[in-house]
Length: 257
Image 1 (cartoon, rainbow, N blue to C red):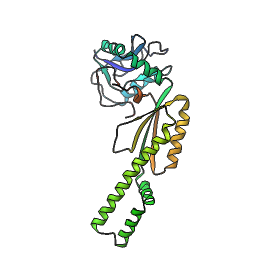
Image 2: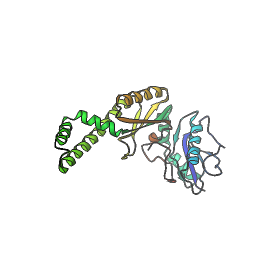
Image 3: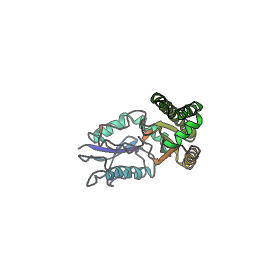
Image 4: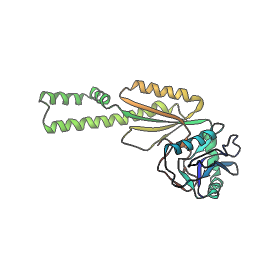
């Protein structure tokens, strides 16, 4: 029977959720595997597991219960090892790494920040910032819209200015928030976002961090800035492979990617 891994914590953790229900239908019973000073929160892995809402919530609930009274290194949804022995073997082999991560992440949470442009607002902004664009637009207007080549050139100029604004806005977002965080991790790039960043934040400083997010949002009305959290620190379990063993199933993650 394959073993589903929710997270890794200290063996001395005072609130390990042994016996609660996890993923699967019916829910598989959560178990605790201990090796040295570490413990893995696991259950049997159901066959045909998919990233449906109920399963994602079950994964998150087990992590929330585990993390309520102490630090837990969260595994991505769908982290499956061949068996229990594979899990305890990796706990032994990577004990130093996991123990260091538990110390570093204790008392911290993750906030994922995504930013994108408001299309109309950013066009107004780049036009206001760029005299060359304004001059070209006025020239085209006086020429009855301009020739096809002129309109094409103008469109390319606008697109280049928007791309430059994206780079600048992403850099300014990072600069504004990184001083309020213990660490930063860049998420996967996507055409849907100009920035996808995860910030590791002390729980006691969360309000200050969110205030900085709001201040940045209000200062740049041409941006849409979304904050998701607090989350378990998925993006900061590593460097190194984030799963203890085996494969990932379901094609989805509960983290920030």
